[in-house]
Length: 326
Image (cartoon, rainbow, N blue to C red; front, side, top):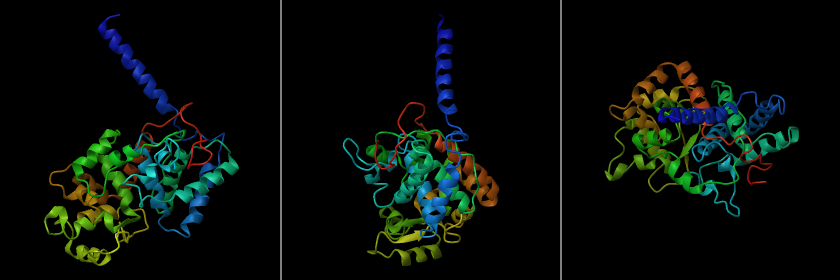
């Protein structure tokens, strides 16, 4: 076989493997085995939302933090156990990642209808789409068929997850490492159009930004004073502030108009618009001017994120309890 033919054969084999892996995720995966799964998930989330307006933002964050660590495999849900150092204890997650009890409630409800069929990783994907829809956002065809990992990666959670105080170059690099581009960075950051963040996540911008003795110069002056009242120096680091002051519980494109007005809460948010010469600026402007374009891009990026290294076929397992392996 010539070297050219050998290269073609290798390329074809890789392409075939890639195609088979992705082909196993499908919007119709549970049509025959658990056709009512989305309705069951929706019912639990709607009930939870009556007591916790933040639950939608919590659930989509769980999906995001799951996918960025070894792919969308439900690993973020595992508790500590023999051989498992929980990702819940990683620095980006400890004390801030939430919604686990509602995931447990969803799993229980799904198991009552379709025992041993729906993975915890897929529950996070379904819950994310429903959470966005319930908050006024768009729908998209969630691709399903993931299986659950039997292990966690706490070190990976510490190194792979984008942080609220990171610069744009670092954030873009972490997205690129999992196959997501600049448009995906901006679109998925738009999930911060609802939910809350703790003072500890952004107070570094308010008083002594990067050891300058001054606040972050990209913060709107009026907004700065509002945030200082919420998060005074020496105050409770766990106090919550709205990621979007205007419509904190709605999924819309106000997040992007906030950035245009220098009212992004997190440094990682505002850098999308305030980094001189960045490709992200034009995308922020497009999404700010056209909510439909943001919605379309967000749905596409969520599908791409959900396709990060899923376990399929005979890999992994279908956990009966999302907190522990079978």
